[in-house]
Length: 377
Ligand code: SMG
Ligand code: MG
Image (cartoon, protein in one colour):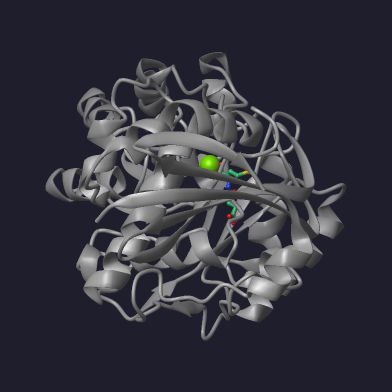
């Protein structure tokens, strides 16, 4: 398959409700979509980088810049590019995994559509629907939080994840346990604590949480192993796991018992699949994370979450958890699950009229006379 051109499109979408984490509040998203145009058809990718470098060092403006100037040119020079060539072709460029993941996803979508295969088939999915959880942001008050959690439980979500930070941890967890009993419950700190907080975090143990996600900064893998000696609640890593190698190291160090897989964070679905397989070999369960994706990213994530070692419900919530109107047909929660798309490639169709309405910019990068050039739209 020959990559002829790539369209980079930015869209703006409002979230149905503000989403507060230990690093800030989001109400609106500036999303970069990538369309791979090949001699065998087109494919879509979604970049999960946020507007600011706060979840990780990546951010949407930088992702677009690195794609245009550093990642797309070497891909557009090639005579033939399959998804499994992308990571190797881009290896000389360090980091920028979310940007790399977006173009690999678009190439994979185009490739599978042309081979008449779905993402689910490609990944070896073993389920036709996946169990879904929901990530609940930091709220202004406990009564507000309980209202939100109650609403999600009424909708059928099979697991609740509470965002925590110093000053918003034991109280909310206790309140949710008291009100909702033994619902599957976990917490996510997004790196907000230090090892000095170990005794404090151990006070979460009596609440029987499924896991505590990324309590310490991402480069403190060894400190997570130390924390695991003090805290009984299983530690799950998110931000720290940037590759299969990082996953292997963390497992060997005893830094985590569970891993959150986000294809964007690790450079793409192919690296994510390696992490899944590695974890299965080590009997480390994984679950699918979320980055507030549109229906495009959700389609790929739900397909991957149907692989056998995805043992816990994912942050793969329904479209209406995020957006009033999605850019694809909406993902709808049925009995706490989302159906795995079975159409070709990602198996969803982009609503091009709506996409046009919410587009803020468009840029084409294309091959011309054997040389990639930038073309303003
Ligand atoms: O997509 O439902 C979702 C969001 C899940 O909490 C979520 N993601 O650290 O796991 C995480 C956060 C990162 C995204 S914050 C914008
Ligand atoms: Mg997380």
